[in-house]
Amino acid sequence: MLDILLFLIAGAAQSSQGENKTPAPTESAAAEAPAAPAFLTQAPSAEAPAAPVFLSPAPQLVAEPQVPSGKFTTATEVKPILNATRGNWVALRDYDGQDLLYVTHLWSWRCGLAQMTVAINGAAPEVWPLPPCHAETAAPNAIIESDGLPFRSFPSGSVAQIEVELIYDDLSADIASFARAQVLMP
Image (cartoon, rainbow, N blue to C red; front, side):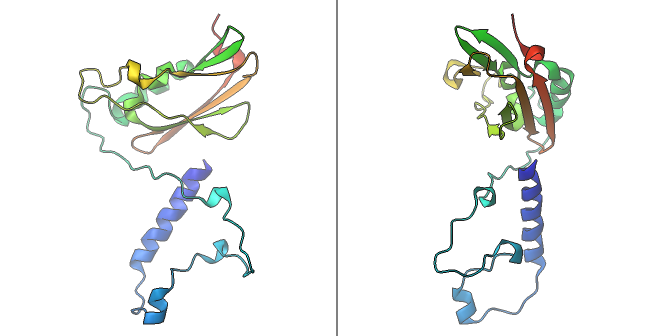
Protein backbone atom coordinates (compact mmCIF):
# COMPACT_ATOMS: atom_id res chain seq x y z
CA MET A 1 0.00 0.00 0.00
CA LEU A 2 2.93 2.29 0.77
CA ASP A 3 4.32 1.86 -2.76
CA ILE A 4 0.96 2.96 -4.21
CA LEU A 5 0.99 6.08 -2.03
CA LEU A 6 4.59 6.86 -3.05
CA PHE A 7 3.66 6.21 -6.70
CA LEU A 8 0.82 8.77 -6.46
CA ILE A 9 3.07 11.33 -4.77
CA ALA A 10 5.75 10.87 -7.44
CA GLY A 11 3.14 11.20 -10.19
CA ALA A 12 1.77 14.41 -8.67
CA ALA A 13 5.29 15.82 -8.36
CA GLN A 14 6.07 15.02 -12.00
CA SER A 15 2.86 16.56 -13.28
CA SER A 16 3.40 19.73 -11.26
CA GLN A 17 6.96 20.02 -12.64
CA GLY A 18 5.56 19.99 -16.17
CA GLU A 19 3.23 22.90 -15.34
CA ASN A 20 5.92 25.01 -13.63
CA LYS A 21 6.64 28.11 -15.73
CA THR A 22 10.05 29.28 -14.51
CA PRO A 23 12.53 31.43 -16.38
CA ALA A 24 15.30 29.66 -18.32
CA PRO A 25 18.11 28.55 -16.01
CA THR A 26 21.47 30.27 -16.10
CA GLU A 27 24.57 28.32 -17.13
CA SER A 28 25.62 27.71 -13.51
CA ALA A 29 22.13 26.54 -12.57
CA ALA A 30 21.95 24.29 -15.64
CA ALA A 31 25.09 22.45 -14.50
CA GLU A 32 23.49 21.59 -11.17
CA ALA A 33 21.15 18.62 -10.74
CA PRO A 34 17.51 19.43 -9.99
CA ALA A 35 16.93 19.94 -6.28
CA ALA A 36 15.09 17.26 -4.33
CA PRO A 37 11.87 18.25 -2.55
CA ALA A 38 12.52 19.85 0.84
CA PHE A 39 11.17 16.90 2.83
CA LEU A 40 13.72 14.59 1.16
CA THR A 41 16.78 16.77 1.64
CA GLN A 42 19.18 16.12 4.47
CA ALA A 43 21.24 18.54 6.47
CA PRO A 44 24.65 19.05 4.85
CA SER A 45 27.36 16.80 6.25
CA ALA A 46 30.85 15.72 5.32
CA GLU A 47 29.63 12.28 4.32
CA ALA A 48 25.96 11.93 3.50
CA PRO A 49 24.51 8.47 4.30
CA ALA A 50 22.89 6.43 1.56
CA ALA A 51 19.20 7.08 0.93
CA PRO A 52 16.89 4.77 2.89
CA VAL A 53 15.55 1.77 0.98
CA PHE A 54 11.97 3.06 1.11
CA LEU A 55 13.06 6.07 -0.97
CA SER A 56 14.38 3.84 -3.76
CA PRO A 57 12.27 4.14 -6.87
CA ALA A 58 9.63 1.44 -7.07
CA PRO A 59 9.23 -0.38 -10.35
CA GLN A 60 6.91 1.66 -12.49
CA LEU A 61 3.71 -0.15 -13.35
CA VAL A 62 1.79 1.17 -16.31
CA ALA A 63 -1.92 0.60 -16.91
CA GLU A 64 -2.59 -1.51 -19.97
CA PRO A 65 -5.48 -1.03 -22.41
CA GLN A 66 -8.60 -2.88 -21.29
CA VAL A 67 -9.88 -4.22 -24.59
CA PRO A 68 -11.48 -7.62 -23.90
CA SER A 69 -9.91 -10.26 -26.12
CA GLY A 70 -11.96 -13.27 -25.09
CA LYS A 71 -8.68 -14.90 -23.99
CA PHE A 72 -8.78 -13.52 -20.41
CA THR A 73 -5.72 -11.33 -20.77
CA THR A 74 -6.96 -8.09 -19.18
CA ALA A 75 -8.04 -6.99 -15.72
CA THR A 76 -11.52 -6.40 -17.11
CA GLU A 77 -11.76 -10.11 -17.93
CA VAL A 78 -9.97 -11.72 -14.97
CA LYS A 79 -10.97 -9.47 -12.05
CA PRO A 80 -14.53 -10.87 -11.77
CA ILE A 81 -13.15 -14.41 -11.79
CA LEU A 82 -10.50 -13.72 -9.16
CA ASN A 83 -13.03 -11.89 -6.96
CA ALA A 84 -15.41 -14.86 -7.16
CA THR A 85 -12.64 -17.37 -6.42
CA ARG A 86 -10.78 -15.39 -3.74
CA GLY A 87 -10.72 -18.40 -1.39
CA ASN A 88 -8.67 -20.33 -3.97
CA TRP A 89 -5.92 -17.77 -4.53
CA VAL A 90 -3.41 -19.80 -2.51
CA ALA A 91 -3.14 -23.31 -1.11
CA LEU A 92 -0.82 -24.68 1.55
CA ARG A 93 0.40 -28.25 1.79
CA ASP A 94 2.49 -29.79 4.55
CA TYR A 95 4.50 -32.27 2.49
CA ASP A 96 7.73 -34.15 3.08
CA GLY A 97 8.80 -31.94 6.00
CA GLN A 98 7.99 -28.64 4.26
CA ASP A 99 5.16 -26.17 3.93
CA LEU A 100 4.53 -25.73 0.20
CA LEU A 101 2.68 -22.50 -0.61
CA TYR A 102 0.99 -22.78 -4.02
CA VAL A 103 -0.12 -19.82 -6.16
CA THR A 104 -1.29 -21.98 -9.08
CA HIS A 105 -4.74 -20.37 -9.22
CA LEU A 106 -3.25 -16.87 -9.53
CA TRP A 107 -0.78 -18.01 -12.17
CA SER A 108 -3.75 -19.37 -14.12
CA TRP A 109 -5.17 -15.83 -14.44
CA ARG A 110 -1.85 -13.92 -14.53
CA CYS A 111 -2.36 -12.30 -17.92
CA GLY A 112 -4.67 -9.73 -16.29
CA LEU A 113 -2.19 -9.06 -13.48
CA ALA A 114 0.69 -6.59 -13.34
CA GLN A 115 2.12 -7.72 -9.99
CA MET A 116 1.58 -10.09 -7.08
CA THR A 117 2.99 -9.64 -3.58
CA VAL A 118 2.88 -12.18 -0.78
CA ALA A 119 3.52 -11.59 2.93
CA ILE A 120 4.06 -14.57 5.22
CA ASN A 121 3.26 -14.33 8.95
CA GLY A 122 3.07 -10.52 8.92
CA ALA A 123 6.49 -10.02 7.29
CA ALA A 124 7.01 -7.32 4.69
CA PRO A 125 5.30 -8.14 1.38
CA GLU A 126 7.56 -9.69 -1.24
CA VAL A 127 6.99 -9.42 -4.97
CA TRP A 128 6.58 -12.91 -6.41
CA PRO A 129 7.39 -12.81 -10.12
CA LEU A 130 4.68 -13.90 -12.50
CA PRO A 131 5.58 -15.95 -15.58
CA PRO A 132 5.01 -14.22 -18.90
CA CYS A 133 1.67 -14.35 -20.60
CA HIS A 134 1.82 -16.61 -23.66
CA ALA A 135 -0.20 -14.25 -25.86
CA GLU A 136 0.87 -15.94 -29.10
CA THR A 137 -0.85 -19.20 -28.08
CA ALA A 138 -4.48 -20.29 -27.92
CA ALA A 139 -4.22 -20.50 -24.10
CA PRO A 140 -2.21 -17.43 -22.96
CA ASN A 141 -2.65 -18.23 -19.24
CA ALA A 142 -1.44 -21.85 -19.55
CA ILE A 143 1.39 -22.83 -17.22
CA ILE A 144 4.12 -24.41 -19.30
CA GLU A 145 7.34 -26.11 -18.21
CA SER A 146 9.52 -23.05 -18.84
CA ASP A 147 7.35 -21.01 -16.43
CA GLY A 148 8.75 -22.93 -13.47
CA LEU A 149 6.78 -24.24 -10.51
CA PRO A 150 3.94 -22.22 -8.93
CA PHE A 151 4.97 -22.74 -5.30
CA ARG A 152 7.61 -21.93 -2.70
CA SER A 153 8.70 -24.07 0.21
CA PHE A 154 9.03 -23.08 3.86
CA PRO A 155 9.91 -25.06 7.00
CA SER A 156 7.16 -27.47 8.06
CA GLY A 157 4.44 -25.79 10.11
CA SER A 158 5.99 -22.32 9.77
CA VAL A 159 3.34 -20.67 7.59
CA ALA A 160 0.52 -19.45 9.82
CA GLN A 161 -0.78 -16.40 7.91
CA ILE A 162 -0.61 -15.41 4.24
CA GLU A 163 -1.51 -12.02 2.80
CA VAL A 164 -1.72 -11.62 -0.97
CA GLU A 165 -1.99 -8.34 -2.86
CA LEU A 166 -2.77 -8.33 -6.55
CA ILE A 167 -2.17 -5.33 -8.78
CA TYR A 168 -4.24 -5.77 -11.93
CA ASP A 169 -3.00 -4.51 -15.28
CA ASP A 170 -5.45 -1.59 -15.00
CA LEU A 171 -3.55 -0.70 -11.75
CA SER A 172 -6.48 -1.48 -9.45
CA ALA A 173 -5.66 -3.69 -6.46
CA ASP A 174 -7.15 -6.48 -4.34
CA ILE A 175 -5.89 -7.84 -1.02
CA ALA A 176 -6.80 -11.05 0.78
CA SER A 177 -5.54 -12.65 3.98
CA PHE A 178 -5.64 -16.35 4.74
CA ALA A 179 -5.07 -18.26 7.96
CA ARG A 180 -3.27 -21.60 7.68
CA ALA A 181 -6.41 -23.62 8.42
CA GLN A 182 -8.32 -21.86 5.59
CA VAL A 183 -5.94 -22.94 2.84
CA LEU A 184 -4.31 -26.12 4.21
CA MET A 185 -4.76 -29.08 1.87
CA PRO A 186 -5.11 -32.58 3.34
